[in-house]
Length: 591
Image (cartoon, rainbow, N blue to C red; front, side, top):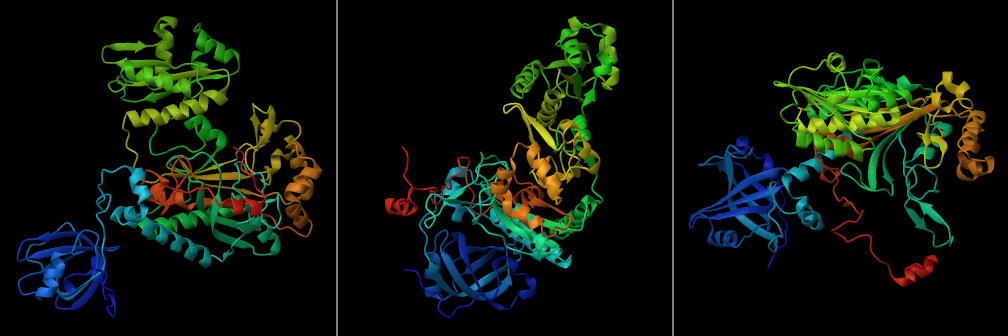
């Protein structure tokens, strides 16, 4: 039977005991990681969230204590009192490896059945099993340290923004459903039958109302919810560091964010982040990297071959240029050996899957040039392409051509990442950049209309306002993203506070005055009573911690995550509810 703790009090954490405490009597508490019974000697590795300490029992130990130690099994919860002494057989692999605690009193305060998997970092069990028993999975040191590190990040965050005059304000969880780009999670109202709250995709409108209210610097570690398909860097519920500031422009917000990033990485990791963080326009990153969230830890920039091949008789290139498109490539330097014909065929299929019509390639091997279109071009054209791409022996050029750059650029950007994986290019460190001047509108082919790339309260650049009604493709936004190692960490913008301009934007997006009032009336009404110029951003806390730790998935930095179908394996949610609960809400389930 398990014994109660009684009056025992822990006086030290397991992983903190060092040689300077030799001779002291301490009480430690935790879980049995391992018991080694050598007959007249018993050793127990006791584990808590700080690490492991060895408990020692020998023939001089009180027999009742010794017998109790011999009954201990893996994951039993123990409280042990004893004297710290030097270990005769030291363990250099753990911080407490030079000492042990010779136990004089032992209590078993919680017994354990045999766990479904061993509590080790290098466990080979499936992730589904670990998520089903997440409370056991969280005992693994690496995962526990991730969650503790996340706590540290949150504390540094609050300290930094508090020291810079920000006020932490909680905004509601049950809100009105508003269009924000993803599906809302809806919550039915028992009192207002047939009506629904939504869980916030972000506190966007509330934080803007905080600016109208006069809280000129707002921050919140906000819980957000989006009903969308999951992937490694996405969860249906997540936390963002939500920031809004009044009487500022883009540079002020970026400088504040950079100060935060510099402080965070220095305090949490001991890493110096160089500031100011480079700024790139959306147009520049798309043309150089084929992505609005480029990974700058390696090169392989996109190369425009359009003028080099203009006049060619090769129909793939000629037709793309005739349609107003382009011919572009990436140079997989030194990739000739790894990018075999089989691998190039795989890359071709991958490019097609990303929307390309095909993939052309040239390989400059030690035995000459090979390629997918050699017979269709002249040797002079091959040489011109080689010179433009600065290709050398051992390099491979991957070339795309299309009548629309909107197809060429992002496909080459994805290909760039895939090739970097295949070539095992080194991707270490932390490479930040700002992407600025995003397009204000993007054309939705399916709907056949222009839609807002960001939310409809984003302000256009002053010099672009004249094009709002005449040339939507020319309009750029006061919007900015913070990118780290190919992951979008943050998105933000300067907001529209001019009621006339806001009304025009709504009309251009196809919203009637009545529809705008119905969806956003409370915000528009607030702007009639003196709205300060303001803007902000939101940094994904989960993604930030994931990148800082080099974790492979958000599930590694979230205590109780969902899996790809948005269910939680441990609690088996979502789950059915009693019929009475549905009746109270006036809800019928359609089969």
